[in-house]
Amino acid sequence: MTVTLLGATEIRRLAAELDVTPTKKLGQNFVVDANTVRKIVNVGKVRAGERVVEVGPGLGSLTLAILETGASVTAVEIDHRLAARLPQTAVDHGVPAEALTVVDADALRITELPGDPSVLVANLPYNVSVPVLLHFMETFPSLQRGVVMVQAEVGERLAAPPGSKVYGAPSVKAAWYGPWRLAGNVSRQVFWPVPNIDSVLVAFERDEEPRGSEELRRATFRIVDAAFQQRRKMLRQALSLVLGGTAAEASAILEKAGVAPTARGEQLTVDDFVRIAEALDANLEA
Image 1 (cartoon, rainbow, N blue to C red):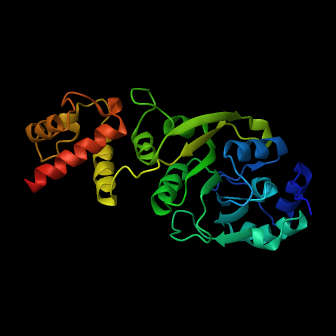
Image 2: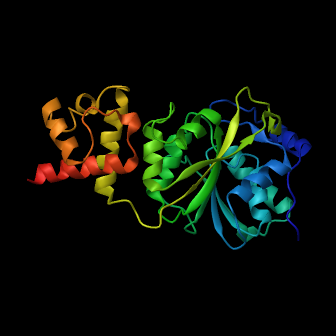
Image 3: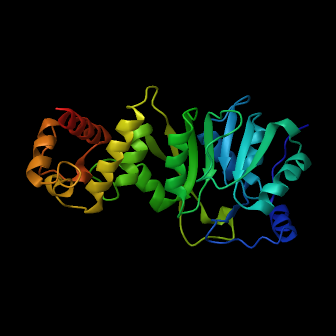
């Protein structure tokens, strides 16, 4: 049986049936355009036989587009009503029962996923998008690539290169895992209700080899947070508390890492931050 997609009329009917009023808090702007959900799946390079984790499936429009490829889906949904209804929607649209697993949980708290998915697909609201993405990249090393639909401001920050205006801590932390890139704009008109902000697609691929140990990641992220807590400050000042306690001690560690003490966090790559963390560790061991 062929998998069919949701249309705008059915999405509104499902919302009425479940008494779901789209809320900003949960980012419930439902996608009602078939071409858009297929575009997202195409950008994610989803293939038959793969296991995909979808965060925030909502009423299931993107879920069905993923399943249409022949992939299987583990869907993580925080809204109990939506989580309970999704399996029936999938059956009604021709999805084999074993192809969809629904996890009724908060994506920020989940630590296990059935099936060890290798692809992440998500439509994430502004307030949790970066925390959810970083949590999933940290917690599920089986994730090798993916695509997320987020507000334009968030997407631009995730994919920002060093030196750009929007480059910040999320940019560096995302880059720890591999490259991220903007992969297309999404029209406001494909959502119901129509939002008052723009959305973009962001695609990522995990590096073949981890950049470092979990201990090194935590140390690097602490330094990143300190560097961007006070934007436009020189690193010898911004990092003084995490690199020894004084500007002089911070300068010595920065120089050991090959980073100018007068540089600013906005200029550094993730590899620069890693070298600072390694120099700090070497300094503590000395």
